[in-house]
Image (tube, rainbow, N blue to C red):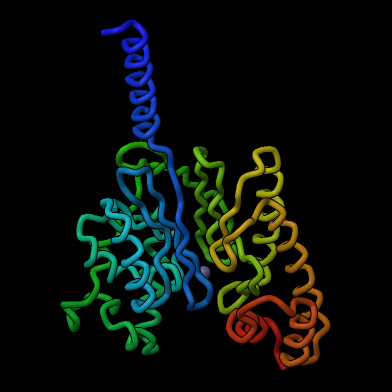
Length: 303
Ligand SMILES: [Zn+2]
């Protein structure tokens, strides 16, 4: 072989091996599935070898669409990570579990598992699960119901390693806010922070049933803390609800201001209608006024 040819050949081999090494290093990519119902976002993490999905929508009809997006990636789904115990993030898990029998449903803490079970028990009690019968809890009277106890696994670490490389760093040291036990995920590879329901972008915040004044204050404090903690890293921020495009840590200041406005409006409003109209005037472009805002006003303003 000619010397130049040998050199070229060696360089090609070197480049190829570097390329395959960088693939094997598990560089994580993320795809967003934007739900129609309540603007919930699902995040699909891929490293080119396997997939993890975070949060799985409020209705089985949405989970079916999400499942198709996951299937189209042609890689094994190993985990279904539920960030907190609210049904808009977990109802889809039954459908996905059946579509992807190898995938494990996981939560970061025992408390989140408990929150999911108690929310579903509550929903079953008031008939809300009649619309999602496969999510009705397994019991003596309903032996074919969803087995929350067996199907939901608690991670024993604050990291979730993707098969084939890459790490999701899981943080749960938060006071009760939008939910009792929130989870955030940070991915160093792509300098991205997945806030789950600490983050609402261009959509009204949820201060509905269960989100007390104390929880709102905790939420505000958490936003200020996140702003400080991530100021230097300046990650891309992926909210739990609302437009997931082009969001950075500036979202936290915007949300703190929203909280301050909401507190001021509900303190001075004489009626629910007045609070609604004042908030809508302040945030004319925000989505979900008739669901997220309406429930928040109903819970905090008493006519
Ligand atoms: Zn939510």
